[in-house]
Length: 292
Image 1 (cartoon, rainbow, N blue to C red):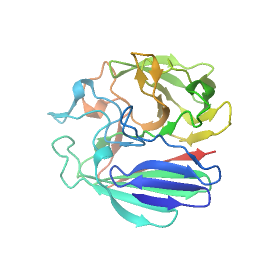
Image 2: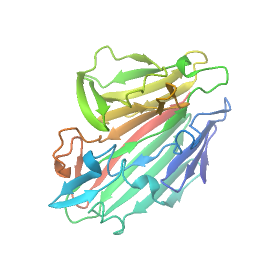
Image 3: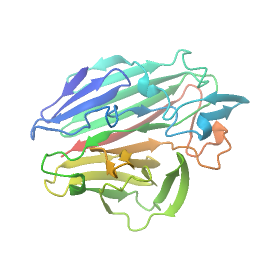
Image 4: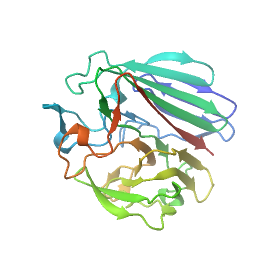
C-alpha cells in the first residue's frame, strides 16, 4: 500500500488498479471512503478504461474484427508500477506491452497521479497512444464515499448538490438492461435527497455538470467532486431489490465516456461518448475530491 499525506489528509493507494482505498481527514479523524466490504461491493475507487459501463452484448467491432470486453474494461485490475513518489504525491504507470491485444487492439501507457493540496486530493490521468494509428477509448472514475459517516445517521440524512456547467443544457440519461437511454433535458437540477429507492433503476447519469457535492444534513460533513470539462457524471449505489435498501456508500463518477446506447451499431469508432487520440499523442484530464 502506498501512502501520501499532508497536514490535512492521509491517503492509502494500492498498486493494483492504482486504486485509492482510504482517505483519513487528520483534523476531524473521519474516514471518507467506502471500506470495500465485499458483502456489498469489493472495490473503492476503480479507474475505468478503455470503456465506461457496459457494451451491448459485451462486445464491439473495430476494423472488421469483433472483440469481447466486460463492464468497465480491464485497467482497474492491472498492476501498476510506482513512477515517482514524494510525501504528498505519487504517480503510477502501466504499459500495455501487447498484453491486451486480444480484447483491445491498441498499445498505450497510462499514468495516474495523485497529489494532495490542503483538504483536497487531485487525480490526474494521462493516456499515451503508443500505437501507430489513432486510438479510441473511454476513461472514468468510480470513487465510493461512505454514507452514513456517523452511527447516529442514516442514508436519508444525506443529499446531493449539483453545479451545472455554465451556458450548457444538462442532459439526463437512464440505464435499461445496462444500456443508455436519453431522457432529455434535466430541469431544476440543484439538490437531490438520498433515499433508499433513489438507485432502484441503477445509476443517475447527467452531462454538462462541473461539480457534485455529497453532504450530511446533520453534521455538514461531506465531499465535493469537481470535474470541470468532463462530459458525463454518474451517481450510483448498489440497490438491493429484496428489501428495498441501498449499500452504505454513494459513488460520484466523472466520466470521459459512457455505456453503449440501446441503438448502438457496435462499431467502436462510432460509440457514443468515445474519445479519439492520434498516434503518439497524450490525453490528459484531472478531477478533484475535496473532503470537508
